[in-house]
Image (cartoon, rainbow, N blue to C red; front, side):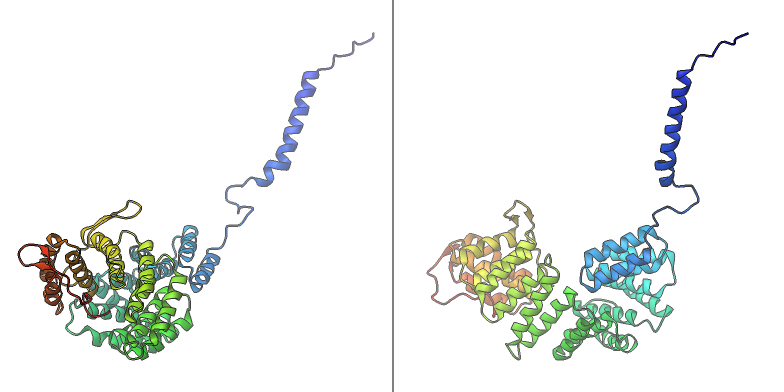
Amino acid sequence: MRQRRPRTNWFLIVLVLILIVIVTYVDRFILPTAQVPGLPTATATRDPESYITEAQGLFDQGKLSQAIDTYLEAIRIKPDDPATYIALARVQIFAGRYADALTNAENALLLSPNNSMANAIRGWALTNQGNYSQADDSLKTALRLDQNNGQAHAYDAFLYGAMYENGTGPYVDPIQTAIAESQIAINLAPNSLEAHWARAYILQITSNYEQAVTEYQNAIKINKNISEIHLQLGETYKALSLVDETNINTALQEYSQANTLNPSDYRPAEYSSRALAYIGDYAKAVQFAEQAVKNSPTDPYLRGNWGYMLYKNFEWPAALQQFDLAVNGGQSEDGQTILPLNPTSNSDTWVSKYFYAYAILLAQSNRCADALPLTQKILDYFRSDQFAAQNVDYALSFCTPGQGTPVAQPSKTPVASPTP
């Protein structure tokens, strides 16, 4: 009558305990972090508008690269907003990234084909790339879509000013249009950085330097951290030094500010070297010319500039070394390839100075066999230069005609051309 007591199933008990542990772990640690399809994530994605606000703040501080990266992050989160592409392209132009700016302006146009600002920014990017015909078409479209777009008028002023400076383009007298467009830009967009910059640029290239200074300063009041504007203001002060040499010091201050805002740009050092050469301070000019080369060691134009400052400072062996690299090419100090200068009839007067000084130093250094063919190149390259024949004759005065051998050196100090 007594029932037998069943045996305990330890395997089943252990299995149940294991399942309880697993369920408890999943409930406490897995489920709270799991994302259910169709429901918002536990950590909300950052609002793209916050990135745009941050990017604008970085631009105002002159931190262009960081602003660009922040705009790109906003686009990654929200890739269908044409306004963000336009803002990004604008900053890229300020940073000198014209190809990228063109791409993003065109991205904006894919999203919004009739967007006046997208067409305007595209035109400004094309202007900076030297593609004036397409820039003209794009800006005409921008103004047709919105005649009151002040920034588009400013970009139009830049375009026509560039055509005037470079002597190219489809228009007979582009400067008149440039002047009119810069004035319209100021009237329509008095608080626009580009409007004041464009007006200053047109005043500068038409030799209205004092008015240009005022407009550059107006642009700086809007944003004091744009390197390019300080650089151009410095060039304007340098032009004013023809009337009052004390303006050179102000020019140097603006170049220094431009360098502070954009240390990777070689131009502040290059322009400083030439401003110092203008007042005869060649020792300091050499230092700045060398700094420009350090920022861009494979640029033959900067090598020529350094060589010229060394030449004017009577450091002739060092000048010859830099002229050799500028005219013939070679290797930089760290082994990079330097391509030779390729002068044309449109080359600026500094290129001719490099060649003149190089020919004279070659002849002075008993290298008449090298100097003689170079003098012929000078006559071919710079035939329209009023100083070409004069400097060739001076270089040849160190060599016996027809023999390529040096003669007694004249006592006078050589000069390649008038002081820059």
